[in-house]
Image 1 (tube, rainbow, N blue to C red):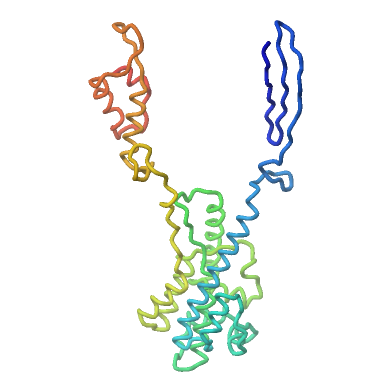
Image 2: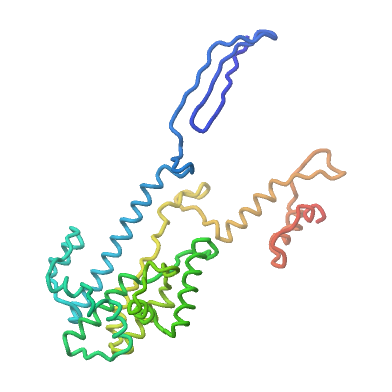
Length: 328
């Protein structure tokens, strides 16, 4: 007698049955099905990873946190140079660590937009007029323009491969913005946005103005403002770091496992030439041939390996056929 287990594997269930075979006769002993939760979530009929919602929320929290840090770093520079109302250090620390926004009246008035004063007008003035930085009002105008740049500092891709569809949409939006700026006779982004504001048009939510380039638009405008207001090189560098600093990607070296062959060392990167050599030797050592003089399949000899090695090192052709090894 032989017992046979049959399994039907599904995405969220396993069906099973046990039969007993005696000669040509099969007897069903037991059967059943185990249903478990799917490994994916469904939303509007589409599948997505179950952790996607949680990871997206975490990424958004980090985004807001880093934007808050950037504003705080810029405010420290502006306060030190009297470009904005003074805030006590404990008020800034409360905003950073306890998320308590500074509700200082003069500071809120400096941030507030009105018909007479708004960030786009301040950016336009800083671009086109030489402000008198000995006057408090002009210093606050320049500070508000710089603070607005830190709130909207433009798109800068971290992708090594820029051929993705997302980057394509962003680049198309930036190209449209460039063409509209040229048609309006505007050189800088702040100048163009101020023109839209004067004409009563929407700016951030307008068709095609969802993205602007960091280097092509925002850094270009920042450099023009610094040059127009004749700010010192040291102050320009400090302001540039506070506004445009982008944290580099975190190192993933700690996730590299230990080498199988050399204990105490980490694994070799895939991009390392030694790994490419290892792949070549692994492939060559798995080749089995049988010539008319051989009675069975055998490995390549050392002389035969030396004969085919140049095929792997040549630069003129990226790939070659396995037939080339047989010809050699």
